[in-house]
Image 1 (cartoon, one colour):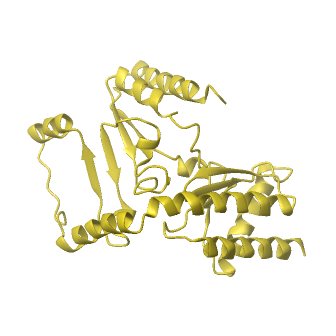
Image 2 (spheres, rainbow, N blue to C red; image 1 turned 90 degrees about the vertical axis):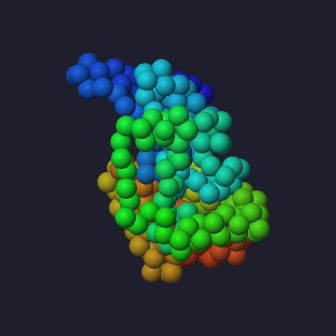
Image 3 (spheres, one colour; image 1 turned 90 degrees about the horizontal axis):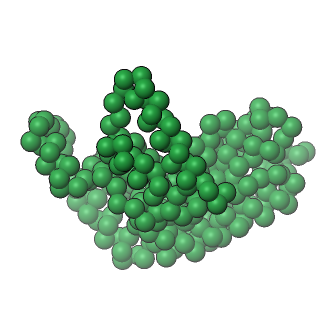
Length: 254
């Protein structure tokens, strides 16, 4: 929908107004920049910009959740918010940051963080762990050294095309969405009812697991296949995933 961004912003304004009508002050909005848990909605590019403006107009803080979309996941940009052409007030970083080691970060504007620091005290027992910080530093070096973003763009295109073709080959009505190495196969309309579509998605996820490939389901009704592989995924890995998917469908049809 060409008006998706403005419609999204309108609904955010309505939600803010509803809060304030109940006497609840509006503090801010946290947004996953690829809406992964909502069904993988990555487009249109830039649709977060009107939402950010709606938040700021209401005096709130726009917080970009980059735990799933950051560190090159979208391929075209290092951060999901960059893809949408916005500058958030706060950015949340997490799991990919240490490539398996426990580390997270909160990045914000100098004004916002100084205001917080002047008002509140914060202490973290495990903050500043040198091993995890070294790992996070190495992750940034490897992303640059391996030109990971270029690989994400190329391999992601193969992945989405392959998913679309494999689903179609088995007569599955689906919409494939995504960018870079985050893809969603929406099977909501694949069966007569949402319950049947959800059951199909579960069968696919389990069938792939039995064949050594791990994906998951997402979306409010559990009817979207979520594929979010490592950023070093290559074309041969895409081929293996698609072969396992093809075999899963063949087994389900037998």
